[in-house]
Image 1 (cartoon, helix red, strand yellow):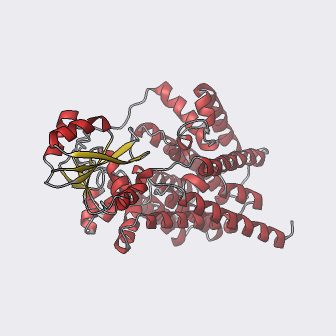
Image 2: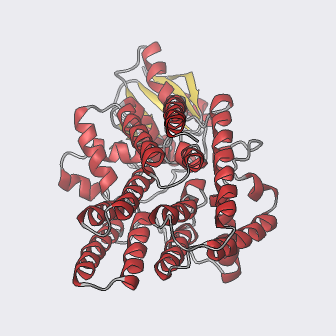
Image 3: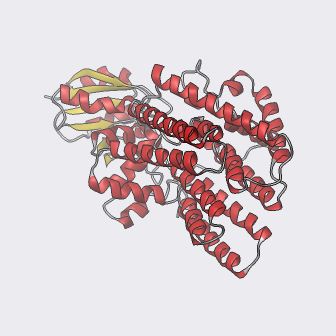
Length: 478
């Protein structure tokens, strides 16, 4: 193909990507996982306060520091979505114009499931980790080992736990080939950053929630290694599920078939990997390290499986001319087509039935009812971040008998019983309030106890987990 034609196709692909990413993000209502970091940073008065509030978050600090700065500009969470989609667009531009791959591979990559949806539309710290890792691959391939590569890898380590895993794996892989003083010094710096970032993720005291790392029996762990590989390499949302973004078509149809496919794909990855020793070391450490995270942590969301395809793509970018067995390119062709098909399904899903938290509707409901100045009471603790995020202010939690906005891992994650909830509502300060509850069956009891009028003014879906429907009442007390 003529270079001019290729440039036009790449530019057209980038334009289509920008339109799709922006439209899908605009149609996406953020929920607990996205608005928890926003509320944490928005309501932290200083960096010291931010450090204290993030001790139970389990994530490195870079995403929180970015949001902290952004929340000083405005308390509107839409800014976070704008920042995140901009990160996704930068990642797409980097792949399309800088990756040392054939043009249609680059197009398939950016329209893949993780690049287009999970790490662009959903505002989490995964997209930032991916951007820095790809920038590091670009620096490594074009400039070699130097301060640019080192800085980008260190930044990746401060974005997400899988960024720590990849940075550590990459340094060990490079050390296996080069043990110069320069490389040893670089390795020490990056290792220090990884340790510091990992230390940040560890709570400074035991969590009162009683949450512990999962212990999975060996057969189950082996099966999960395979099924995670399948869901990471063949990320096809199950459009028949009520939550297609968190259900895989192959895995939902048969866990056994998913496990078999996963084992075959794992073997193929190691068979077709570059024969270079450092590449194989990186693949083993990055792949199994990132797969271990959802197994040990007990995570089942699809976004946790993206590092599987990321590790494979990094090897192609890092070592485009490496010695590979015949069949490596057709195998990668198939993987990228699978990724792009998953991305296409996400576009369809976003147009027909977008994963949408309706917490964004609450400010509109209150404005319509002229209740925007009244206290908002939330009895479902995990619904607080989504509601508080879109309201742009703290809410009253019955579980802690006070104002709050995010789920504090340092506090007990309990759910009040019906009697305790009614008593907590009795203790509210005088005056009317808006009651957001997952237990609408208590409506009449609240009215009788408070001798109040309890009027239904709206309902919200996908605001919290595991109970997703929240009913909104206006309580008018005498």
